[in-house]
Image (cartoon, rainbow, N blue to C red; front, side):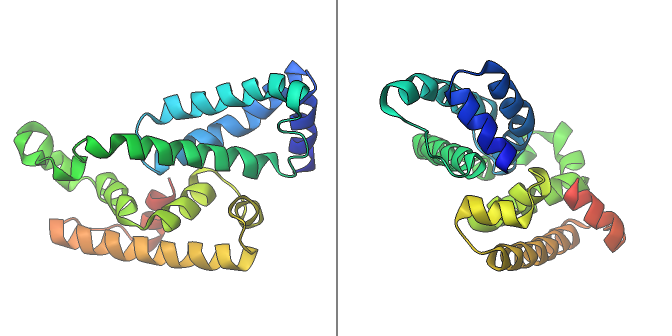
Amino acid sequence: MQELREHFEAFLGGDNAAFAELYRELNPRLAAYCHKLGAPNAEDLVQELWERVIAMRSLSSAKGVGRGVVSPLAFLFRMLRNLITDEYRKAKDEIPIEECDVTDWPERASSYQESLEAVIFEAFDKLAADDKEVLALNIYGEFKFGEIAEMLGKSVDAVWQQASRARTRLRKIVEMDAERLGITLPQKRELKEKVLA
């Protein structure tokens, strides 16, 4: 965490190599987080985040913007979370995919319904936003509970408990949906690997 803070400060001071390190370290995790939250135009949102971060450099020298950021990790994830929220607000007039009838696409319907990956993906989307966020950060963003706690402004124990409960809820949703669709689930170990993949 200290290294990220040093890279962030160096970047704001004009060090392009420090920005490259920040980007290399955080971009895959930011993108995974954005995708797993189901953000529309996820790639565009992550790109917009980096554009705003780059713009901070000139604002930093002029007005001190970004100076004193204690946790760049939490700061960047909060920025991305705000961008995702704004994108959802803009997309309110669009028809959600859940309201589309997949049986209109017969060539895809049977494979769609039989796919365990699709069941897991749909189950993930059924979780509450807070549960999705914690699991996306932990599983797909590969953040430790301490890092997530810092990002979300919660205690480590609270984040761990929320993640544990969210996994239990996800497992139950997957089991119910698979049974409803007549899909045989793999053994628990294999299912765990699929959910975490």
